[in-house]
Length: 154
Image (cartoon, rainbow, N blue to C red; front, side, top):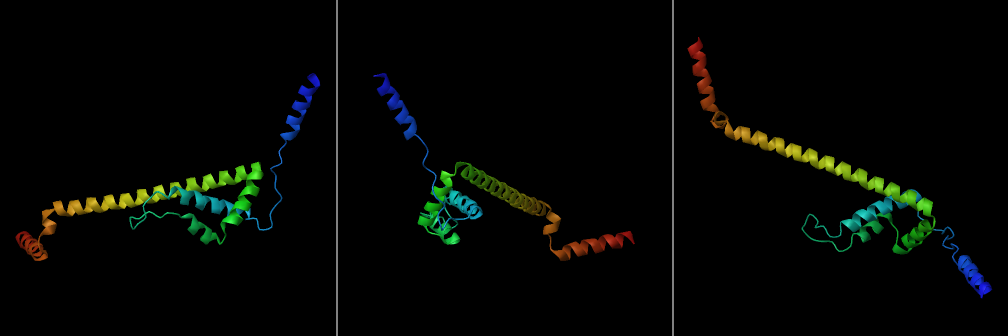
């Protein structure tokens, strides 16, 4: 009985070896292209439920990402499978993708802040013009008033 138990444990340990390392495919997407592709894919997948500028919801932005990089889903799947079998390399790729997304988020936050600041300054300027009644008078009235004040001084 003990020998049967040891044989089962031995078979279990042997069968648990990792055989998920694939050969490098011929049409592998280069690492830097894969980083850019995954960045765009994550953005596209998160934008799926957002309305576009025409207030419509696109059903699938992934098609646009594949067209941008001129690849098909099969090539992506083969490359992604290969990179996921290389755990350390794939972890590095995902860290760079996260860094890209974070930097894009920071860039667009700063851009929005700048646009909001400009809109706020325009509103303040508009309000100050509307509140200053003298600026709303006709230019002839202002010139005439200034001319009369000049005559009083002289």
